Image (cartoon, rainbow, N blue to C red; front, side, top):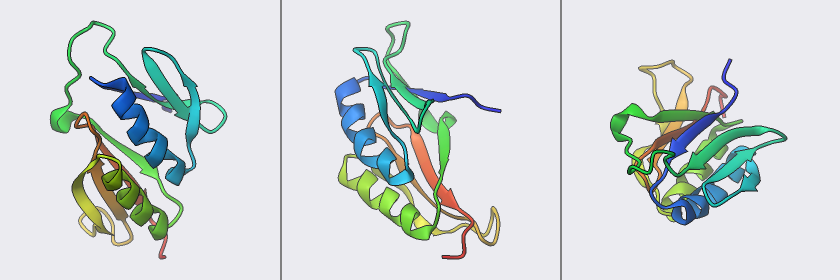
Length: 125
């Protein structure tokens, strides 16, 4: 079981502005912010955006991919719309992904640091 997930950022303020807009669509809110990280969750921290502890630049490539649960397809659509409007890059528009499952409906965006995030639901609507 996963306790929380962290991704790196080269610009914490830019990342904060992006995630402050995108994560509430999925029911997460900012719980804590310091000069080194911004933490999100419901009642406990589930997701963090952090400056690298070693001082090196954050890099991601295709190696970082995090999928968030969305309640329904409208939430997936809104996640994608808000993410693009707040500096994300389209990495796969909302739609069915039958190669994964016939009811798999998801959308992919890259955050301003290149981390690939997704919202997904198996709901029919």
